[in-house]
Amino acid sequence: MPVAHTLEGPLSVDVLGRQDPELAEILLGELERQSTTLQLIAAENFTSPAVLAALGSPLANKYAEGYPGARHHGGCEIVDVAERIAVERAKALFGADHANVQSHSGSSAVLAAYAALLRPGDTVLAMGLPHGGHLTHGSPANFSGRWFDFVGYGVDPESGLIDHEQVRTLARTHRPKAIVCGSISYPRHIDYAAFREVADEVGAYLIADAAHPIGLVAGGAAPSPVPYADVVCATTHKVLRGPRGGMLLCGSELAERVDRAVFPFTQGGAQMHTIAAKAVAFGEAATPAFTAYAHQVVANARVLAQGLAAEGLAVTTGGTDTHLLTVDPAPLGVDGRTARGRLAAAGMVLDTCALPHPDVRGLRLGTSALTTQGMGEAETARIAVLFATALRDESAGRGVREEVRDLTGRFPPYPAH
Ligand SMILES: *Cc1c(COP(=O)(O)O)cnc(C)c1O
Image 1 (cartoon, protein in one colour):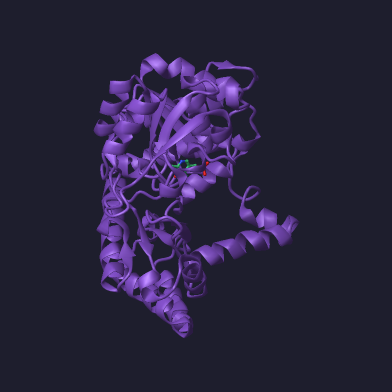
Image 2: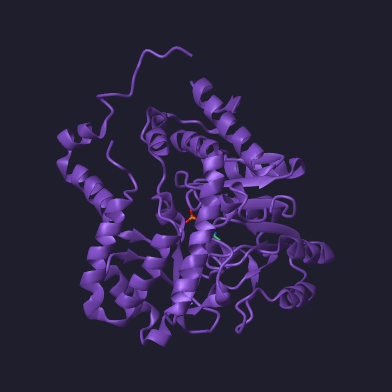
């Protein structure tokens, strides 16, 4: 398609600097923060400049309620192509019959999955929040806990592994309409076949909330929920490295129900700039470079887990299969909250999280972002040492901060070109 316009000049960030220096400074300040500290938040990553370009494009102006070829607004012929490409790429990437790429976030995707399959008051079996369930898995502060009757399964307090016997017992007792598998902090692969078996036994739908591992699935570094789950919900911005957003995958028999659950049931107009950015990210995720990336993310997480264990931290389940791990810093004499503060002062950004032992706040770390920066096992091993150094001794924070600055300087997330 011949286009007369270019995105050079008038649409560059310089425009913001000239018009609104106050906000331009915030954008640059955040870029500086991201570039000079270590992003260990397991849910975060660095999108590519191509993804950012799609997000900052005039597609942001377009209203597009409905689906390609059946919109409530005029002028959708070009953005329709973007959505069709995003859907086709998602289907091919994950081997799914159907993909919906309109969900505004991971939570919106979960809401749509419930809307497609459940009625208010239905019983749902999901991982309990103290064990690693997401807010949308039955928190009383969330629509899920208010509108559905959630029963929580957990992990074994000693091994930290999902207790599949408990899942089966609870399913037999409560006869849920749906079972949800997926977590914000589970470091091991999810055994989707085991969940499918229990769901079949009690006649429940299986919803896989693969918000975290879906990027590893794309890169062939984690098992896929697609052959097992009735509906897969996911984010596009975690390991998958796309724009902030959600998506749903399902078989063709549920396609119409899922689409209607997203629009018009729970959302209005689709965000076409984000959908175009999702298409770009799916394109990137289909490359051999992304497959190598996904495997490197896991290799780095394993090195980080080994390094932290060697430094004396208690690593949940003894390690990881994925991009994330959770640790208890108590053996080093600090609780989770104090630890997060000390690490922040040393330039390492991460979250506290629930641990299998009730009432203990631990730390959750991930390697998605640092791997995107090009760091490998040698750097990750060094990060484990720096991490423990900053935790043990508050006065060591300043020295660690300098080394973090040096490390991130050698692996910039957005190299100047
Ligand atoms: C991140 C996450 C979500 C929610 O994603 P948002 O985009 O923050 O709404 C849902 N479920 C799980 C398991 C997650 O990890």
